[in-house]
Image (cartoon, rainbow, N blue to C red; front, side, top):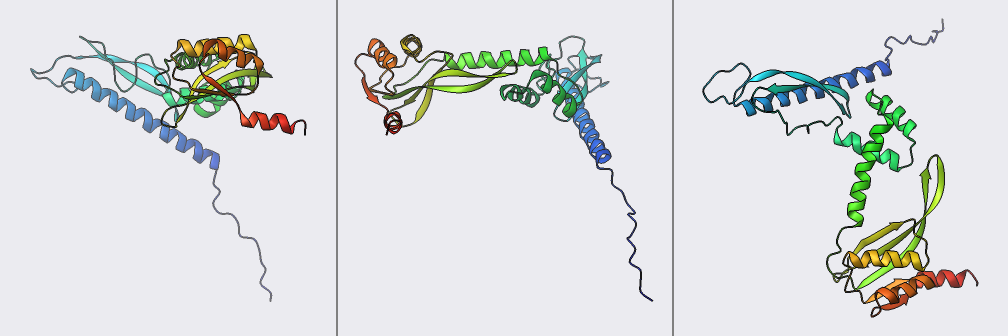
Length: 266
């Protein structure tokens, strides 16, 4: 008799979604428990005694706790924030009034900068962390970024940069669901040690004399000095502006731009 080859029955079935959810909950629970233990330990340090411990060196006593939510990469956790009778509990572990882990905030900002719509960001956060981040929250986070960008743009220029490259570039920007072109003026300096550094960026300015004059004034007011040579394209407005703000500095036409101009007609 021929042995019949019958398919073996699948004895074990693995529900991957259930396992993933279970592991996620374990991680979230562990993070929550660890943070609460750390908060208790910090409260003990401030009181100079453990909970319910009595001795003369004790400096404060507990007055219960209140709950706070914190969004982490592992999901939303509930923190039991200790309350003290004589002093305000300010933990070094989690900043006061903070609602999100720094890495979560960075992820939200990066998504927005990458062109992801606010509504889509809300859906992503609900999928990843179980809670939906509001449009107002994203707007407030972006205000922090814009403030840092403005601080960087207006920082003093220290040291001398003998060689400075100036150019205007056109970038794509997603705004209100529409992709548009935006002009950006850029200055890159080379210091006396041969290292390049971005000295300035100006968004929205046109490549005409008014635009370049405003940008060069911005660089000079921030301290750009010691320039011996500017390297740019042959934009007339730019060359004329250089003569107004840096009359003693030499100018050289960028070879790359020159090649492009030649090849466009050859």
